[in-house]
Amino acid sequence: MIKQRISNHPAIRRGLTASVVALSLTLTACAGSDAADADSTAVVTDATPSAEETDEVATSVDETTSTTDATGDDLATVEPAAVGGLPVLDDTHADDNDGEYDSADAISITLADGATAVSGDGATVSGDVVTITDAGTYVVSGELSDGQIVVDSADDGKVRLVLDGADIASSTTSPIVFAQADEAVVVLADGSVNTLADAAASGDDDDLEDAPNATLFSDDDLTIVGSGTLNVTGASNDAITSMDGLVILSGTINVDAVDDGIRGKDYVYVAGGTIDIVAGGDGIKSDNDTADEFGWVQVEAGTITVSAGAQGLDGYGAVTVIGGDVDVIESNEGLQAMVITMAGGSVDVVASDDGLNATAHTADGGAEAVEEGVAFTMTGGTMTVAAGSDGLDSNGVATITGGTLAIATGASSNGGNGALDVNGTFSAPGIVTVDASAIAAGDTISIVGANGTTVADFVATTTATSLTVTASEVVPGETYTVLADSDEIGTATATEASESVAVGRGGGGGGRDRGAAPDQ
Image 1 (cartoon, rainbow, N blue to C red):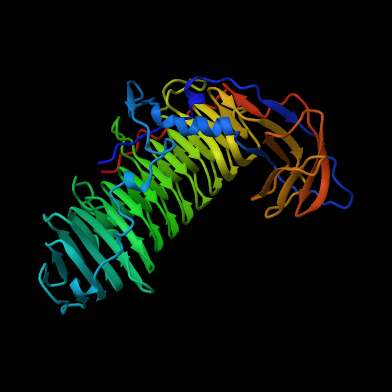
Image 2 (cartoon, one colour; image 1 turned 90 degrees about the vertical axis):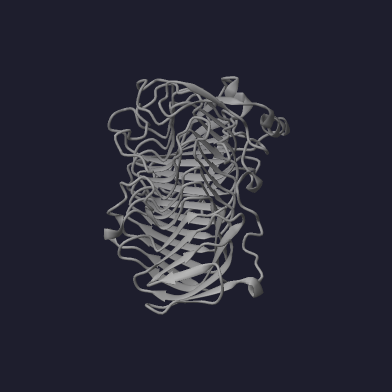
């Protein structure tokens, strides 16, 4: 089992206190611009790491960091990951060829109510329940209106289910359960549309420790791959769950769950695919809280859209985005973990509470406490955040050396909420604040220097009354032109001071609800 490995930029571990150029700007609107009525504030950061900073990140693989355990009382040292402090596919159970198989060696399972047929050995049928006991590849097609496939194999080797037009529903339990397998693989056959659905009544035994709690459930490592479509409805609990690691290599996956959409207890690694999630709980979740095996979520590629009642992406130990497109269109908190890392790709977040919440998952310590091992780090990519509370709330440190971060937050009613709320050290290239009353959602915003250089470029996801921009090339006293869809809407002059960042004045809390019962 892979251990969670959380690695921070060396500058974080040294407690580097950077001299942040804070830039407070007044935007003079151009004639003819209509001001939008909005009660919010936006923050944008933009930075390009230097060669020295890039080398420093690369050498971080030789270092370790301390993180608080589930109780927040003790410290556990966890090793860094193999490359740049971040996991790679080889760190997981999956192989990039998991979707490949010889159809001549595959066993066909043709589903039909009361008449399911199996073409060879390795699987048996009893009523409308198919039980697979041998490792191998099984091609599943047809329909069961109230049935189940159970994999219970003690063999070494993968059990590969190729879903090729399979439609399975169950009124009492999970339609597909990997109860035992050396490794579980679900292949979505090219061009196929596959549907799995449970019923609300199927969750009646969820209080049992080993009871399946998802429509597609695996007690072991699970990989999903292919070029087909998988539609999953979790009417009783989660849609897709692995009690170990979960890797999504490819495929079109649509899930609708009353609780969590996609959950891998030890980790969730997304290397591709198109994923659409509607969830009453978390969108994508990894919640192992064992001190040296904290759950983590990493997105390497693909397109993910999440509408969640709780967190969009929630990793107990870490949430990392190094590529792909993540769009959290609705959530309580967009991204939540002890360590949040943005290294590439794009992330758009809409949240009713904090947009980005770096926390040790405990409410102990008070509003200004700095939680060890907690960090937000950004080295590349583009993030936009529209939050009802803090845009970025780190109960530890926050370091920005690259990429663009744009935060829009609502008006604060308690004085503790804002665009940036960092309990510990905050390091960023610079901060710029501009009037954004003439900017509309969907506008492409550019902040351009006198020499024509664009220091920040992003798409506004919401209306806002002001923008606060951090950019490595911003110079105090210099005047910048602000463009919306290439139209000049005003100018802004940089200054030396800003109150945009609440450093060490944390809004408190930031912890996970400790009263909720944990998932099994």
